[in-house]
Length: 314
Image (cartoon, rainbow, N blue to C red; front, side):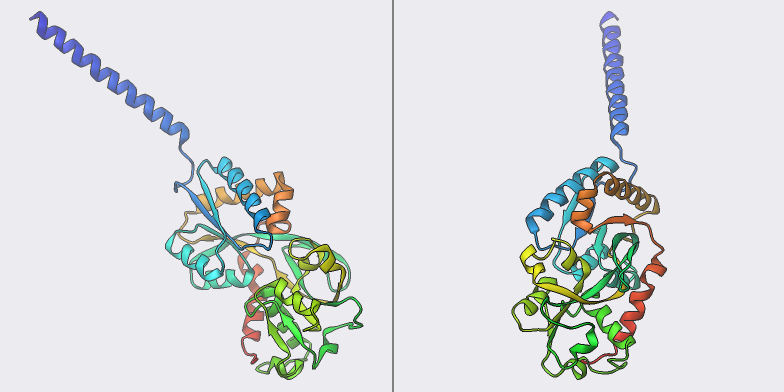
């Protein structure tokens, strides 16, 4: 009888100990649970010229965001928007920082929505300062050239940043159409001349055509000329702005459509906090700060530009 009693007491003691351990484990687990529904966040950024500097900024952003939202943050730099779009669709990427043209594709294919947009400060075509969720495309030429506007480059060799660049192709072509220099359904070469249109692989490749004398002008974003993110000080010293055109809807943080709205808001708020707390980081990665925008309004101008420019022949 005594042995049985002792055995029962031991069993009760062990059960109580296990229960206490489980409860303690539950408490610890609850203390570490993130308010997000996912276990990690994957962000895709477009690569910059200075990859090493970008890697350092990415690490800082990842650590800061992870601290804010309580889960690991992984950042990658895919080479093109198709990779980002596929990742958003198959849930291997949660957020992509892309151009407004890319954002249109993401929305139209129902894989992502605009979460935030870049906030820029510079000079408009009238020479007045501005601040907004947009920026301007510029035509650059050598400093010693006398060009005053793009109409003077008829029959001259020029360089676009790429066939898919918003500020380095889409908006400059739209501006040429609005000025009546190229007609809807017309040819770009009809204005600049056969064999005079070069398509680069990015901003720097287009500007190099001007610096080496192979083109008279290059279409790029304003920050290529005004900031040290893409060109050296020596390269910029040899150039000047012929004209500005736009506005260009700024780059956007697009969040995959399948991510719950609560998660989106938490990430939105965390990113806003980070760019305010880390202005240097924000400048390095985004060329400015971030701001919430109405998606339809933000993408309205680039949608119109894409519709018009898509009619052009090379």
